[in-house]
Image (cartoon, rainbow, N blue to C red; front, side):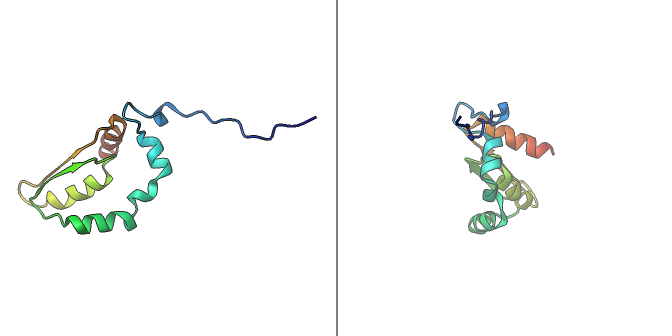
Amino acid sequence: MVRDTRQPKRRRSNEDKPDASGWSASLYNKTAPFVYSSAFITPVLSLLDAKPGEKILDLGCGTGQITLEIEKVVTQGKGGLVVGIDASESMVSGLVATDRN
């Protein structure tokens, strides 16, 4: 008799299912958490060199971790604002969940 040793397929939770744009914030955060590590964020923030009071538009903000870091700088000055935009409803929902925590 031959025994099947393959692992059963794991079902994705509903939050892991990609949205209409093909992205899943939950799955992205599970498989690519290094993207938000200091080693990746620091050079980006250094190149941006945001200043207090600036107005910044973050296109493709994903779940917004970097957007929130930028916000900490620009809101130190009068009128400072950062707006994050992403085509993925899942990613933006991840941003909203992050911001509420």
